[in-house]
Image 1 (tube, helix red, strand yellow):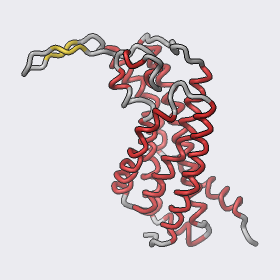
Image 2 (image 1 turned 60 degrees about the horizontal axis):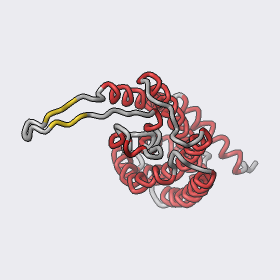
Image 3 (image 1 turned 30 degrees about the vertical axis):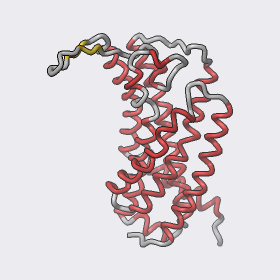
Length: 262
């Protein structure tokens, strides 16, 4: 009896989701996504107003902590003048896109290192199904990390007593911003999957390659998914995510077809 594409993909997804939800790495990354914004916000708030002196020049510099909870998510209108923006413009929710690389690289390299991938392709699964399943697993992990980071940012802001003022933006803008980031995740995951299937069991190589490839687009994330996002941003990110997933998914399948599975 011939097994349909839907049945093969469903079976592959069940296996990958079961492995992912039983993986210690998955829960460690989720915990990091939740705790990072809390720790950063509280520590930066505690350091607000502290003075450091350059021993060579004697010049004093004053540390400015965050003033608004949403600095962890993006730049508010007029936010350039807020405290702590230099730090939070780089160390904010967009870090999750790069952290997702760790999950994908280790998840895929483990398949090749253990011999699971070779056995899988020999027995039942097709390489296209494998790529799709890994991409969807990575997108789910990335989306959950984005959501937990958002929760952590809110908790951190509450603990530090920061303002929740949106500076003229609305809750709808905030929702659109998060949706846009989630829909943009497939762009990065597709890059990480391509690099990982090329590197196979060499996790260090796949992580270095994924971080390098992801950095090419990383600086654009804040521009594509600003705090003032609208439905247009969501649509553009969704379209980009689908196109990248299809294009790089085909490339990943071609890499698996033309290389050995060891």
